[in-house]
Image: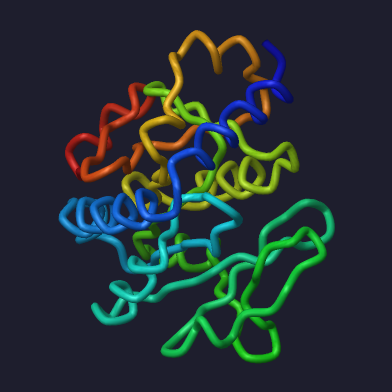
Length: 214
C-alpha cells in the first residue's frame, strides 16, 4: 500500500469518529499527558492548531500557560521548515489563516521562540506532534511536506540527553501495525518518542529511555 492510500484511509477513519467522540477523547488525552513525567519535566511545550479532525492539544496549551511553562505554536515557512511563536493568554484570538488551510499564530502579535537556543541552554522541550497515522515503533505518517521531520531532526541534534521529547497525539484508529508503516518508511522520516492516545501514553519501542519519564 502506498503513502497516498494510507493517508486517505487514515483521514477517513479519523473523520468517522465524529466531533463529540473526538472532543471527549481530547480531554482524556490531555489529562494523560498532564499526568506524565514528560509533562512535569517540560519547561517548553510545543503544540499546534489542529486541522479538521486532528487530535486537538488546545487544553494542553492552556495548561502549559497556567502552569508557568512556555507554550509555542508553529508557522509553516519557506524551505518546508517550522517557525515557533511563543503564545500567551488569549492565544485563540491571536491566530491567522494560512494558504494551506490551517490557522497559525499571528507573527505581528507573538514573538519568536528559538527552540535550538532553548535546548542548547538546557531547557526541557516537549513537542506535541500531529499526524495521520502512527505505530508502536514510533513511526509517524504526516501529510507529505516533511515539516515535522526536518524540525524533529534539527531539535534532536541540539538538545542534550533527556532534554527533548516528541509525543504524537492520536486517536486509537490512527495507530497501525508496525509492518504497514515500515513498508513506506523513508530515510528522512523522524519517529516520535511516545504516543498519547485516548486516556493513556505509550512509549514507542525505538526510545526505551523515554519510559523512565512517562
